[in-house]
Length: 119
Ligand code: FES
Image 1: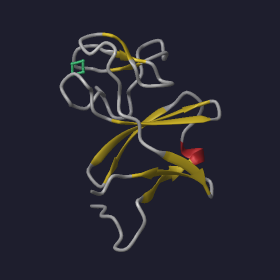
Image 2: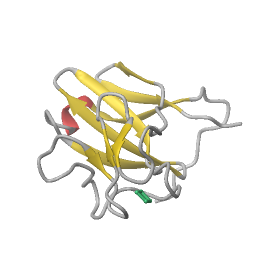
Image 3: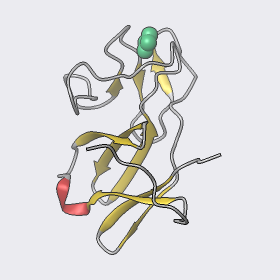
Image 4: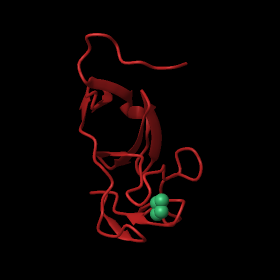
């Protein structure tokens, strides 16, 4: 099924119910052609564009698999860049000191919402 933004809707779009992710889990979502990485850490949610600052390609090697083997960092499967999950900053690899792009989000009505750039 192809999703398209509703006519006359706001830029905020629902991604998932908050119960869909467990503590420490990551998920990839494709929102109207915009690939996202969603992380749930304790009560915090992080949402990044699924685009590595090194080459601008997706990070995962399998669907929803974004973390390194220890589960401490987001890892790009192409060249191994490691990103801090709390702020998206690259701490190792070919794009060190660059960052994943953050996506504005909120929790409302038990749903994770993201604000998509529709310009
Ligand atoms: S494309 Fe991500 S580290 Fe090279």
